[in-house]
Image (cartoon, rainbow, N blue to C red; front, side, top):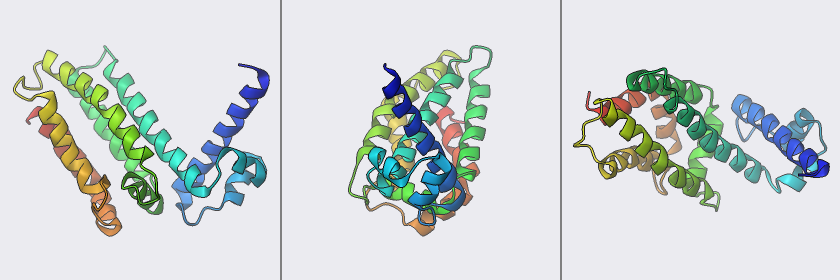
Length: 200
Protein backbone atom coordinates (compact mmCIF):
# COMPACT_ATOMS: atom_id res chain seq x y z
CA UNK A 1 0.00 0.00 0.00
CA UNK A 2 1.47 3.36 -1.04
CA UNK A 3 1.84 6.38 1.20
CA UNK A 4 -1.09 8.22 -0.34
CA UNK A 5 -3.46 5.33 0.32
CA UNK A 6 -2.18 5.03 3.88
CA UNK A 7 -2.91 8.72 4.45
CA UNK A 8 -6.40 8.30 3.03
CA UNK A 9 -7.07 5.31 5.26
CA UNK A 10 -5.83 7.19 8.31
CA UNK A 11 -8.00 10.20 7.50
CA UNK A 12 -11.02 7.96 7.08
CA UNK A 13 -10.35 6.37 10.47
CA UNK A 14 -9.84 9.81 12.04
CA UNK A 15 -13.25 10.85 10.75
CA UNK A 16 -14.90 7.66 12.01
CA UNK A 17 -13.27 8.02 15.43
CA UNK A 18 -14.45 11.63 15.67
CA UNK A 19 -17.97 10.66 14.58
CA UNK A 20 -18.05 7.82 17.11
CA UNK A 21 -17.20 10.20 19.94
CA UNK A 22 -19.75 12.78 18.85
CA UNK A 23 -22.58 10.31 18.19
CA UNK A 24 -22.05 8.49 21.48
CA UNK A 25 -21.99 11.75 23.41
CA UNK A 26 -24.60 13.90 21.67
CA UNK A 27 -26.61 11.48 19.54
CA UNK A 28 -27.17 11.41 15.79
CA UNK A 29 -29.52 14.37 15.40
CA UNK A 30 -27.56 16.86 17.51
CA UNK A 31 -24.22 16.03 15.90
CA UNK A 32 -23.37 18.08 12.83
CA UNK A 33 -20.97 17.25 10.03
CA UNK A 34 -19.14 20.49 10.85
CA UNK A 35 -18.52 19.28 14.42
CA UNK A 36 -17.23 15.91 13.25
CA UNK A 37 -14.95 17.50 10.66
CA UNK A 38 -13.52 19.90 13.23
CA UNK A 39 -12.81 17.10 15.70
CA UNK A 40 -11.26 15.00 12.91
CA UNK A 41 -9.05 17.90 11.85
CA UNK A 42 -10.35 18.12 8.30
CA UNK A 43 -12.70 20.21 6.20
CA UNK A 44 -16.31 19.27 5.56
CA UNK A 45 -15.41 18.89 1.88
CA UNK A 46 -12.80 16.28 2.79
CA UNK A 47 -15.25 14.47 5.05
CA UNK A 48 -17.83 14.26 2.29
CA UNK A 49 -15.25 12.66 0.00
CA UNK A 50 -15.24 9.67 2.33
CA UNK A 51 -18.84 9.77 3.54
CA UNK A 52 -21.35 11.35 1.12
CA UNK A 53 -23.92 12.02 3.85
CA UNK A 54 -24.40 12.08 7.59
CA UNK A 55 -26.44 8.88 7.31
CA UNK A 56 -23.56 7.17 5.48
CA UNK A 57 -21.23 8.23 8.27
CA UNK A 58 -23.61 6.99 10.95
CA UNK A 59 -24.02 3.70 9.08
CA UNK A 60 -20.24 3.26 8.98
CA UNK A 61 -20.14 3.62 12.76
CA UNK A 62 -22.90 1.04 13.24
CA UNK A 63 -21.06 -1.36 10.92
CA UNK A 64 -17.86 -0.85 12.90
CA UNK A 65 -19.69 -1.54 16.16
CA UNK A 66 -20.91 -4.85 14.74
CA UNK A 67 -17.57 -5.94 13.26
CA UNK A 68 -15.46 -4.75 16.20
CA UNK A 69 -17.90 -6.27 18.67
CA UNK A 70 -17.72 -9.70 17.09
CA UNK A 71 -13.92 -9.40 16.80
CA UNK A 72 -13.64 -8.62 20.50
CA UNK A 73 -15.92 -11.48 21.51
CA UNK A 74 -14.00 -13.81 19.21
CA UNK A 75 -10.76 -12.87 20.98
CA UNK A 76 -12.40 -13.64 24.30
CA UNK A 77 -13.38 -17.08 23.04
CA UNK A 78 -9.76 -17.68 21.97
CA UNK A 79 -8.45 -16.94 25.48
CA UNK A 80 -7.29 -20.37 26.66
CA UNK A 81 -6.59 -19.11 30.19
CA UNK A 82 -10.30 -18.77 31.01
CA UNK A 83 -13.13 -21.23 31.37
CA UNK A 84 -16.18 -21.04 29.14
CA UNK A 85 -18.27 -19.66 32.00
CA UNK A 86 -15.70 -16.94 32.69
CA UNK A 87 -15.76 -15.99 29.02
CA UNK A 88 -19.55 -15.83 29.09
CA UNK A 89 -19.42 -13.57 32.13
CA UNK A 90 -16.88 -11.29 30.43
CA UNK A 91 -19.06 -11.06 27.33
CA UNK A 92 -22.13 -10.21 29.39
CA UNK A 93 -20.29 -7.41 31.19
CA UNK A 94 -18.87 -6.12 27.92
CA UNK A 95 -22.26 -6.16 26.21
CA UNK A 96 -23.90 -4.20 29.02
CA UNK A 97 -21.04 -1.66 29.13
CA UNK A 98 -21.29 -1.05 25.39
CA UNK A 99 -25.04 -0.55 25.61
CA UNK A 100 -24.70 1.85 28.54
CA UNK A 101 -22.31 4.02 26.51
CA UNK A 102 -24.62 4.41 23.51
CA UNK A 103 -26.52 7.68 23.44
CA UNK A 104 -30.28 7.00 23.22
CA UNK A 105 -30.66 9.08 20.07
CA UNK A 106 -27.86 7.17 18.34
CA UNK A 107 -29.47 3.97 19.60
CA UNK A 108 -32.59 5.05 17.69
CA UNK A 109 -30.45 5.55 14.59
CA UNK A 110 -29.02 2.05 15.05
CA UNK A 111 -32.53 0.58 15.29
CA UNK A 112 -33.51 2.44 12.11
CA UNK A 113 -30.45 1.05 10.34
CA UNK A 114 -31.15 -2.52 11.41
CA UNK A 115 -34.77 -2.15 10.31
CA UNK A 116 -33.76 -0.64 6.96
CA UNK A 117 -35.67 2.57 7.58
CA UNK A 118 -32.90 4.68 6.10
CA UNK A 119 -33.22 2.94 2.74
CA UNK A 120 -30.36 0.46 3.13
CA UNK A 121 -30.12 -3.08 4.52
CA UNK A 122 -26.33 -3.45 4.68
CA UNK A 123 -26.26 -3.31 8.49
CA UNK A 124 -28.63 -6.25 8.91
CA UNK A 125 -26.79 -8.19 6.20
CA UNK A 126 -23.45 -7.62 7.92
CA UNK A 127 -24.89 -8.76 11.25
CA UNK A 128 -26.40 -11.89 9.68
CA UNK A 129 -23.14 -12.67 7.89
CA UNK A 130 -21.05 -12.60 11.08
CA UNK A 131 -23.38 -14.18 13.61
CA UNK A 132 -23.27 -17.83 12.49
CA UNK A 133 -19.52 -18.36 12.76
CA UNK A 134 -19.29 -16.72 16.16
CA UNK A 135 -22.24 -18.47 17.78
CA UNK A 136 -21.25 -21.85 16.36
CA UNK A 137 -17.79 -21.38 17.88
CA UNK A 138 -19.28 -20.35 21.23
CA UNK A 139 -21.66 -23.30 21.32
CA UNK A 140 -18.92 -25.78 20.42
CA UNK A 141 -16.72 -24.48 23.25
CA UNK A 142 -19.62 -24.73 25.65
CA UNK A 143 -20.31 -28.30 24.59
CA UNK A 144 -16.62 -29.22 24.89
CA UNK A 145 -16.65 -28.07 28.52
CA UNK A 146 -20.01 -29.79 29.14
CA UNK A 147 -21.68 -26.47 29.91
CA UNK A 148 -23.94 -26.29 26.86
CA UNK A 149 -26.12 -29.36 26.40
CA UNK A 150 -25.58 -31.46 23.28
CA UNK A 151 -29.36 -31.34 22.93
CA UNK A 152 -29.14 -27.64 22.00
CA UNK A 153 -28.45 -27.62 18.28
CA UNK A 154 -26.81 -24.77 16.39
CA UNK A 155 -30.05 -24.26 14.51
CA UNK A 156 -32.11 -24.13 17.70
CA UNK A 157 -29.71 -21.64 19.23
CA UNK A 158 -29.94 -19.45 16.11
CA UNK A 159 -33.73 -19.42 16.39
CA UNK A 160 -33.38 -18.39 20.03
CA UNK A 161 -30.94 -15.62 19.10
CA UNK A 162 -33.14 -14.39 16.28
CA UNK A 163 -36.16 -14.13 18.57
CA UNK A 164 -34.29 -11.45 20.50
CA UNK A 165 -32.93 -9.75 17.40
CA UNK A 166 -36.13 -9.75 15.38
CA UNK A 167 -38.13 -8.16 18.18
CA UNK A 168 -36.01 -5.03 17.91
CA UNK A 169 -34.09 -5.07 14.67
CA UNK A 170 -36.33 -6.44 11.92
CA UNK A 171 -38.48 -4.18 9.70
CA UNK A 172 -41.68 -3.30 11.50
CA UNK A 173 -40.11 -4.29 14.80
CA UNK A 174 -40.30 -2.63 18.19
CA UNK A 175 -40.81 1.14 18.37
CA UNK A 176 -38.03 3.49 19.43
CA UNK A 177 -39.78 4.20 22.74
CA UNK A 178 -39.99 0.51 23.59
CA UNK A 179 -36.44 -0.09 22.36
CA UNK A 180 -35.07 2.54 24.74
CA UNK A 181 -37.12 0.98 27.53
CA UNK A 182 -35.53 -2.37 26.68
CA UNK A 183 -32.10 -0.73 26.82
CA UNK A 184 -32.78 0.16 30.46
CA UNK A 185 -33.16 -3.56 31.15
CA UNK A 186 -30.13 -4.59 29.09
CA UNK A 187 -28.40 -6.31 32.00
CA UNK A 188 -31.42 -8.50 32.73
CA UNK A 189 -31.97 -9.35 29.07
CA UNK A 190 -28.31 -10.21 28.47
CA UNK A 191 -28.32 -12.40 31.59
CA UNK A 192 -31.44 -14.25 30.46
CA UNK A 193 -30.10 -14.64 26.92
CA UNK A 194 -26.70 -16.09 27.81
CA UNK A 195 -27.95 -18.31 30.60
CA UNK A 196 -30.83 -19.40 28.40
CA UNK A 197 -28.26 -20.66 25.90
CA UNK A 198 -26.60 -22.83 28.51
CA UNK A 199 -29.86 -23.82 30.18
CA UNK A 200 -29.16 -22.32 33.61
